[in-house]
Length: 88
Image 1: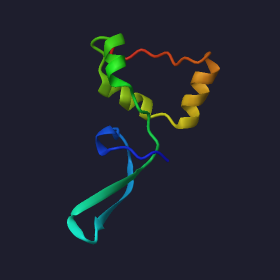
Image 2: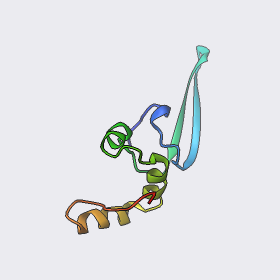
Image 3: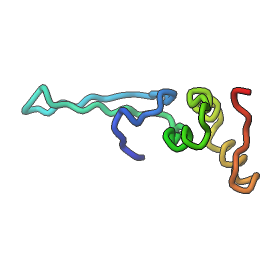
Image 4: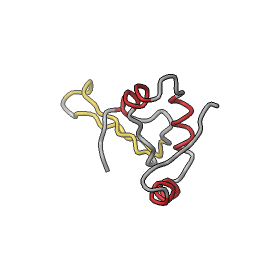
């Protein structure tokens, strides 16, 4: 399971649980771990560059509505691609 800074967490990630750990020698020093269901991670900068004007929020919502198994099945069944029409 990868550990990433919170700013990289998908805003659509479903948080299962979280735990905060404090440094016993310094109460100001702590770390919070978020345990989330797996979710699609988009390369937003590249997608925005390749598809100018695409609504990344809509794309993220759509892709995260599929289970991992369904996404794999679509991609593997279509020669490594996942074609869709979004926002028109």
